[in-house]
Image (cartoon, rainbow, N blue to C red; front, side, top):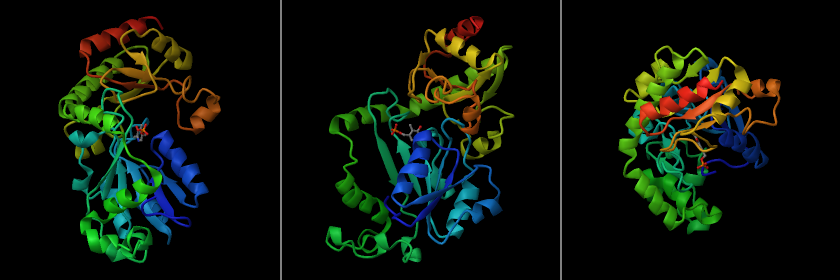
Length: 334
Ligand SMILES: *Cc1c(COP(=O)(O)O)cnc(C)c1O
């Protein structure tokens, strides 16, 4: 909303959080902003072909929720900059502990602070972090909202007055004023408590997730395990390049018994809770086919990219042996 208006267009990776997909595919479309979705493993040619005269931004997620695809920063940065637009990346799952997208040329980073940053399911929040590196003036006609006077704010020209701070200053003095998207002081306090231990929690999440993934991988009732942290995963090389110290605590897996076995296994868990929330200190699981996507039949599920047996496992920071023991007794019930 800070750089797009009715008649504009964005290019977006299709591997993104469902809420963001709905926002881009439906809600902003009603406001006249159109999105073209591309697969994260799109070729350079196809990616370049997605741009239009009126394209204003490119968007993706460092590690996508829940498909766990890793965004190829080099490919997306190159395409965005060749077309004179910024790359905006949602870094929620990786967090700044495991990935600093600015170092790869990303222009603007967003976070749902509701997840690892808070870490304790205490408060909802979000953040925009502007690198200040995108040269809005070099594409001044495209970004008149930043390079021409804003009559609603004393006729200020954001790029002239605030330089590298143009984008984020407009976001706060104009959009925050008009839309009220601010966090309450109490929630900001809670978020800050979480941030103080983020650097301790993230390595533990990654370590535990890897142990759980390896355990599942060797279990006879498990059909598949997906995490970019495991060698052999289709995103392993990208994860090694952009997140050599670890990815995140979220993994996905499926059982040979399919949908019914997945439900039975989850209902048998004792330590691990069934929760829609994700990326929390406490381990939790979600089975989209019987929860968030339960109105869909098998065919519709597959079209939406949700395998009927897919369990999203958000591995917490408890003792890894305790988590694995819980999974073990639940699988014994299937
Ligand atoms: C949860 C989530 C969001 C939305 O965040 P809320 O704080 O729940 O509004 C956005 N992006 C990603 C990757 C998420 O996991």
